[in-house]
Image 1 (cartoon, rainbow, N blue to C red):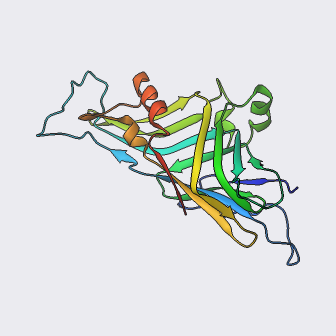
Image 2: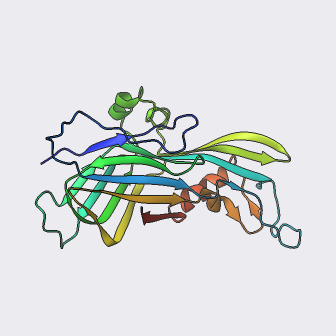
Image 3: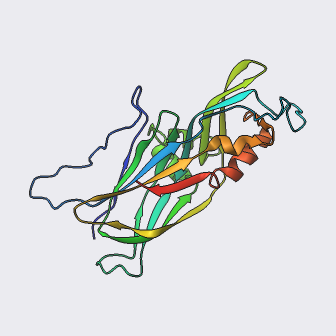
Length: 242
């Protein structure tokens, strides 16, 4: 059984979509590697309050912002698990696993965020495990530029960075969440990975939608906004084949 390799990509200045990086060496006589890729896309990176007839529709008690710009959303996953379809007849384990890794939704545009070399097969389900690093894992990854921010303090699982404008003044913000849980994705139709090709999916997130309320947009620097972000992150994420 072949080991599943995961390729990570960090944001690079002036580059919106990072090219693939190959792990290890290969020759022309090596068999083709099967690959499963995840692309991330951040929708509506900036938002302003929605107004009706020029009036805010709810009372502004100091919780609202003039506008918000989300620069990036980073989520730590301890593991990805792909489940084979019951109709899959290829040999190999019924589950393919990889991790840990970080997915980054960036305002710079769609990016190839993860590539895993996996065995051929037909997969019907994906599970993403959003769990904190253990103490030993935090030590192991503390010098890794991709994982570093998830190894300090209480060890976050999600980090949102951006700028909020309140009373005409711009203030940078960082929202960190420690929420854990599993995200399940059903592929309909199933995703097929072949020996000769690469299969990819796009995870498109609208973080601004998590901050919107009727007639306003929450200030992400305030505690109540964290609850909204945590509650809406996956309900505002859509997945499609690439």
